[in-house]
Length: 420
Image 1: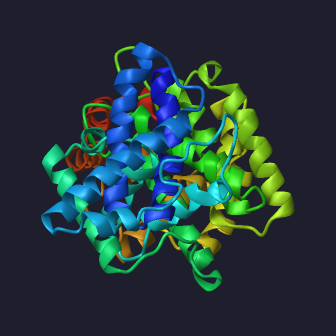
Image 2: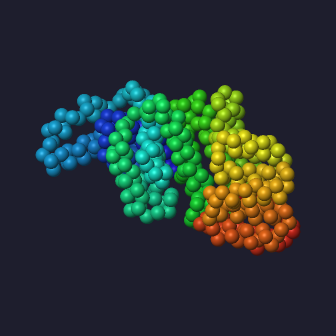
Image 3: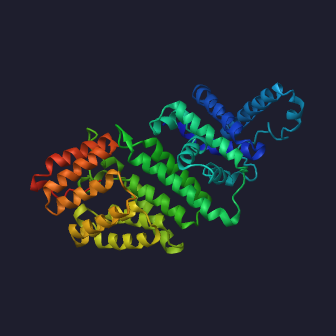
């Protein structure tokens, strides 16, 4: 990402928030901001970044919005009433370094709007990336491997639903704030996960999504520095992202956690993540993201796979299971159980998870079962489970890895490699 692109991503939600707060027309404001971002992407590399880039974007976007409003009202013969309704500060450009009152909380308010409960989770993801992340519709479509026209329709319907729900650009009522924040954090978590391990396609990682999720999590943490779960989510992302350089080989092959070259891990991100989660655990009420971050920290601080403190990880998973009834948590809990009490104990937990059916047709239970069967010495069963997992995944790197494990598992010397 170029310097200009990074700056535009940072400014996009601030500019959109200013316009929506002034005009309360989310769809029109979002279109106007996207046009301003495109203008900047063309002009700034050629002519230089303005002294006050945010004010430049606000001015250009405001003019685009006014043009849109006037065009619409011209059809209805209401140009004069549209001009009278225009805010007095619509063309005001802030001075260098000047921050208009109220802008500081706008990014979080915008996230609340994009994650409105009237929207489906896919729409929340798409609208957050487009409106708050500053990605174009084509970029969002590419990230989720759908045609641009399909994503454009999804985003358009999301805007219409927000309008139909009567949502306003304001923080949620105090009684709804905690639940709405939980949804915001979950959306950022999903964006990061999709970037870290893409559910489909030829690539294991989608760097633009992990980078955007971390950037937005940092923004929320700046606004809510004392919220333990916000800090926990950011820490979890950093501690997980720290391992990314070692997750694939030079040929793009997936490298499981136990085999990764820990010298390639980003120790700066590890240190930042450990500091964040340590502070949150000592100062804030306990929450699921903090516990997940603590688990990630135990992995990242182990000098080698063999020196991982699995009893501590198992204890943390027991705490996490009490906080979050999540099948993926239970899946990882089964692995920890196996590493402490043996593969049969993990397989027993996996059987209980399979009985509730929440991960039916997902490849991960089959992959974990294969790994535990391999540890137990059941090579034929492991090979079958690896092949089943390969059949179920839509990710080419994961499928290649699983097929390779199925082919090699009959060799006793290959047992115990572990999952990524």
